[in-house]
Amino acid sequence: MLDLNTTYAEKFVAKDELEAYAAAHAAVLERCQAGEERYADSQGWLDVDEWAGEEILSRTERLAEKIRAIADTFVIIGVGGSNNSARAVIKALAPKSARIVYAGNTLSAYELNRVIGELEGHDVVIDCIAKNFETLEPGSSFRLLRQYLVDRYGVEEAARRIVCTGTIGSPLDDLCQAEGYTFVPFATNVGGRYTALTEVHLLPLAVAGADIRALAAGAKEMQGICRGVTGVSNSAWRYACMRNILWDRGYRVELLGFFEPRFRWFSKWWEQLFAESEGKDGRGIFPSSLECSEEMHSLGQYAQDGTHQLFETFIDLLNPGEGDSLVLGGTDVADAFDYLDGKDFWDINKASFAATRAAHAEVLPVMTLELGQLDAEHMGMMFYWFAFACYLSGELLGVNPFDQPGVEAYKRLMFKALGK
Ligand code: PA5
Image 1 (cartoon, rainbow, N blue to C red):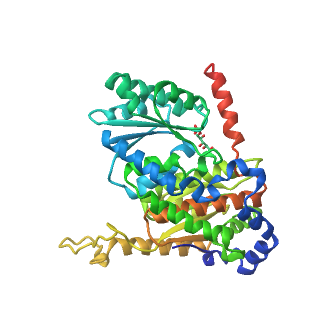
Image 2: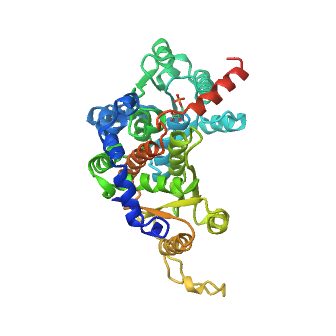
Image 3: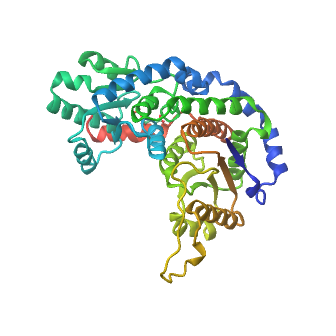
């Protein structure tokens, strides 16, 4: 179950105002639900079956099994859209099969030394995920770790331990063919940050032991809702409309708030999705996150009393899962916390959330994404829901949600500085 509750924002955006805005822009929803020819090279993710259908799921599971047979440690070499989704799921659900190490997302010598240290004493397979194989971080990490494997295992065995996920016909594909590495095709018509439901992330997730079938099923369920439901009953559309009404009113920052730290890396995925999709042409809401309750003691002050240019979207995890209960017993020590005797931390945390939302809703617009459970199925739902909402929101804002010209500009300058 996933739904968006906008009632706490009604003080700022009345229900009929939201409905009128949605009705006035209904053509946007309609054309996005159908998919657009002008974005044909970026919309493969709209139909979950195209890149996460039965055939792909099966071949991914088979390859994951082969990898796990020779490795207990799998290194994801990727940055941005090439690592965020897998990391979001792995950090949230902590699947128990192979250990995952992250590289290709830093140029810090200290961090890369640490990564190499993490590989010592383990059986390793690496996966270089790079759409066009020109990004500096994954390219340099791949060279480093490839050499590490060759030194450790020899050329032939190292080749068995190298997987690359890249565009067919790209230099990475050529390299794989020349060196005998396993090649996994990067979804041709999906841009990096929209690849959650493609082999780019399905493979590392399957190796880690996450339930990729449940992930795909959750995403498919959301596909039905996002692409099938009309008007404000469509929660993704409601979210996109709210964001743009608020943008038009001068709100410039959105905080994705959550009271389960397990959403930390999901929030990084969300930040990338919205920042790269909407932040262009001098426009776009700045996406940031609010990790509660810790950041109630830092950013919370600003949210309550600072400049009111921000609004919040809280993820409310409705039902506890395994490990979500811990009762605080009594004590003989007079510590002034007697009012907590016998209470479960799950309920204490919920009370903190309810109080925060009530306090913030007085001064800023607050939306709540209600999520039934925290599991692979619901993460699949969130991936699809936010991706579709981002597409809608970018269209309402009047930007191309599928390119990232600013990122390209920095890359050009960096390559020049490094003498490429
Ligand atoms: O969403 C995007 O397109 C980007 O964030 C890319 O995923 C990121 O820059 C990594 O690109 P590549 O896989 O080509 O190295």
